[in-house]
Length: 137
Image 1 (tube, one colour):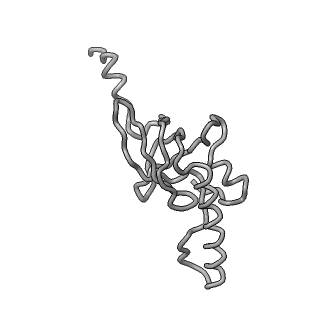
Image 2 (tube, one colour):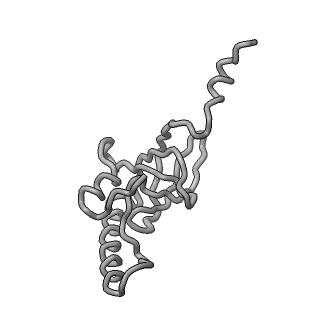
Image 3 (cartoon, rainbow, N blue to C red):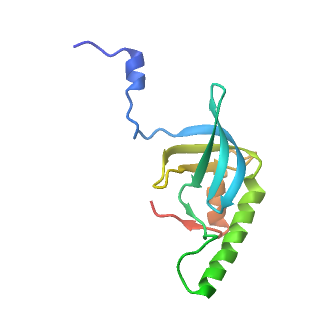
């Protein structure tokens, strides 16, 4: 048996490996409290537009599907507050995102670091401010 070359070893990791990837991105549109569209700098002069879902966070829906009319109006009002807070913090701004996989609807699950703060994330902030709940993994 021959040893694999260093290049072959470096490229042989599985797609499902636990590697996390960090990218610079500009948030161009906030869709709701836990979804946005970003222009992501992939490196090597490559920029890609992707829909991102905040990992581990579930914000109220702007278009609730379940519940009575009163419950739907309440959820819609809470969703507007969460969406506006996310817009205020990251829309149109340069951020750093951390991601490793897509969710069941094809959106990249991401942790988005607040602009100018390498320790705090929008994911944490929404939970702390009660604008979202922890999404079960």
